[in-house]
Length: 116
Ligand SMILES: NC(=O)c1ccc[n+]([C@@H]2O[C@H](COP(=O)([O-])OP(=O)(O)OC[C@H]3O[C@@H](n4cnc5c(N)ncnc54)[C@H](O)[C@@H]3O)[C@@H](O)[C@H]2O)c1
Image 1 (cartoon, protein in one colour):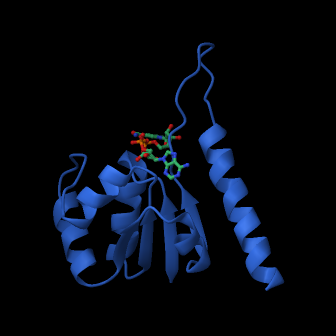
Image 2: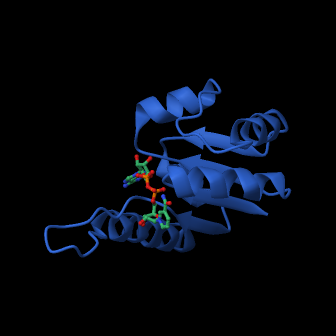
Image 3: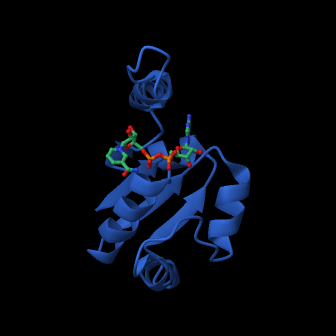
């Protein structure tokens, strides 16, 4: 199945790697250009036991791709997971604005594709 994960931090990168290892084609999208450039060169930005091997294996098999282009991910995926950050605000609630931004983009893009 073709999947996308938006936000490849602790949660998103691990999820994407495991989904690819299960046989899915996964596009990893992040707006951090440096992080995506590093991942394309095999630089894993976090430590999780075994993660580097899983990423390397699945990228080599063509099941794991990295991009900063959200449109590419949305246009080529059946299911889109959102794993962007939700930092704490001053009153200790979660700032979900990044999640809403990504969800809004996905909705607009899907509607546009359906209208074509
Ligand atoms: N880390 C944990 O142990 C953990 C556990 C449970 C739940 N969570 C939740 O999972 C979510 C993700 O947490 P995390 O620790 O992986 O965060 P993170 O900060 O490690 O990763 C978030 C990633 O999203 C990217 N990003 C932010 N806005 C974006 C946008 N508009 N488009 C594309 N990429 C964008 C950032 O560049 C970053 O790489 C949060 O809601 C968090 O509360 C995390």
